Image (cartoon, rainbow, N blue to C red):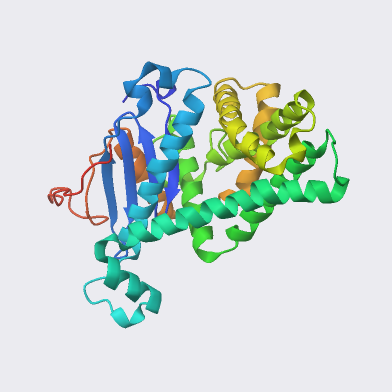
Length: 338
């Protein structure tokens, strides 16, 4: 196995599963409804691997963010399909009328259709909560007219909305379980980075707050957004009073915010000092909401995914937990994502 310091591992929680990005590729481990763990290694070619410019500082941030979001969404939908599918004896009467209508009209493409609809609704909700609403609140508090601190009010409102929203959804049963897989992902990575053997006992002892987490990245972007938006208003006085123009400008400066945030996250994970601790602190605090302590069966999934990503264990499609190692796994018929 390669030196831990030479390998950076990242991951993402899925529905009843964990995705790990390692030197061997992207590994996905899912706990199936019958209790088995399915692991699969996906060979993915990222833009930074094909084009040098995509790996340049301040360009790699937006590129990596968009690619990871798209790929992560595909893996999330795949985990939903595999972990919530009816078994052979499943009763179709248990399906809702909407599910029956979607299944009848779209068949195998039902999850894709649901995904598209969810994506559109999600974007609309995000635009309302994080762009229009903070701007409206700032106008309500400070009144109409030019005011240089309005972008700061907007930024604070976004942070309040983000924290409140994440806290509210964290109390939902399904989301709470998703956050437990998020905790298992972090604890497994910490165990590996500490040079310890990947066992349930060793992983259980690790902390669940990691500086490279996407939660830290989002929180840092919210803070950077306050600074860049304020500077923009100071350079171009009056621009904020034209609502449509201001919304367009905020969309245009979003890649800049991502670029700066990405580089700062990389910096804080590689150099531990007072400055980087301050940068990481808000995101680490936020992980108290977005991660939960996982049970042993959830930790097992995180370990399985990480081992496959590191090449310590072969992928195993539909291999029951605890089966004889001499048993041959079923052939993988799924196409790898590219």
